Each structure stands twice: as C-alpha cells, then as structure tokens.
Length: 295
Image 1 (tube, rainbow, N blue to C red):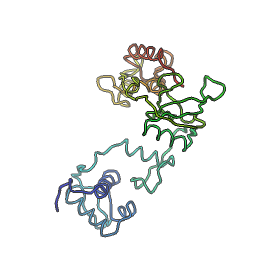
Image 2: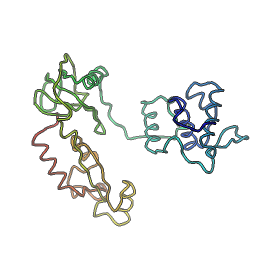
Image 3: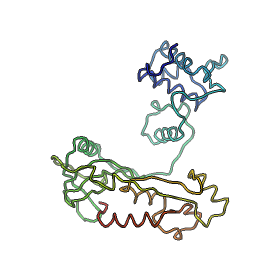
Image 4: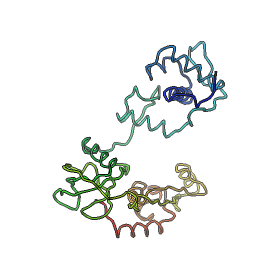
C-alpha cells in the first residue's frame, strides 16, 4: 500500500484521524465505529482500517476474541497529536448540549459535571449581523443597552472581531459615537436597523493588535509543598508561567484569574497565584484606561 499522506483526500484523512483518536483514548476501534460516525459502507470501513495499518502497522492489532482492533504496545501517533484539551472540549460540548452525542469522537463519555454558568441571551439574528458586518467591513446601527445609561441608545459601530471573556461574548468594534474602539456585549445589542460602508480598520485597534504577557507564580505565602502543587496546576517552569493575552482582553483575563486585586486582599489558599510583573501590567492598564472605556 502506498504510504504517501499527500495523496489522501480530506474525508479519508479525517477517518484515519478518527481511528487514531479512538485507539489512543479508547484503546480499540472497529468497522462499526467508522460506519456509525461517518455513514460509510462496510467495505469502506474495512478499506480505511487496512489503509491505517499500511501507514502505522505497529499501532493496532486485531483481537480475535473481542473481534476488534486494539491499540498496539508500540503505538505512536501518525495523524494527530494527542491533545487533552481537545478531548475535554468535546466532553464539555456534549455535556453542555453544544455538540450532539453522535457527532463526538468519544465512544464512552465519562461522568461529567461543571459549575453552572448563567445563559447569555445572544440573539442568532444579532450574531449573524455582527459576523456579516465583520466579513464585509461594514458599520451597523445598533440599539445598545449599557450600564452607564438608564435607557438603550442607538449608535453606529464597526465590528472587526468577536471575543469571549470566559463568561460572555463580545464584539470588538470601532464606536463612531465615542470615536474609539470598544467592547460591546452581544447580549446587550437589542436591535439592528441599518448598515453602511465603514472606513474603520482593525489595524488601527492598537489594543486588539498588541499582546501583553502575564507572568504568574505561586503566592509567596504558600508553603514549599503547596507552591509545588500550584506550579504543577499551571504548568509553571522555574517558578512561573507566562500567559499571553491581547491587551484588549487584559481586564477580563485578570478578573478571571483572580489577579485583578492586590495579593494581600485574599488569603493565600484562595488567591493561590500572584502576578509577578504586576507593576508593569497595572501601569499599562492605566494608560489604556485613559483612552478607552468598556461599553
């Protein structure tokens, strides 16, 4: 069999990735798995399994008693890099109803639960209009409810990106009313009634285009053993971890990580991590606040 991956069609390669995903995470795969997942015939499923063996003969062996292929002892990924984040993202998406169970590559979902997050009411038509405006570089007139105003106001904005702060979805846009780039919560856009050509450019949004690096380390008042545990949790090396974030999302990142207050404001066991380059970050935030506010 020709072992040249460059000759593979996209659908075939996706099925080979699926075989490898199942072998790594579940330890076995068979024809019915491919048939159920992709709707292919028995012959096609057999061909895909044989093709995979041609690329990675040591990765799976046929178990006659179980009537399935099982992961070989010398298994080495050929089509995808095993990624815990990808697995956990699928698990969460299925559990939260974002992804249909039949569309997930995980065969046997482990029991799962998550801390509840309030549902944010984003209107599909609103999201469609925002995405369309981004694609064609248009400004749209939106009726927006901000915290600073008792009543919603009509304003023109030119969206250029969508962002998630860990809890809520925003659009990053140039506000023609306030003459600056700002964040607008999608759930607070109540109505859209017009569009027009926009000359605003995402390249001019300095806070969106630039990044800052947060350097975090264990709280200094933790014991040596506790600090080692926290370092393990955050993948720290040399006592610190570096986290890159767009400057426009810095406020949200600090808040989500619990770094938006001074370390002494909370007990070490609650705070757990501190911002090592706090002075640099805070001074940068003050400079940003002087020229922009969040809608």
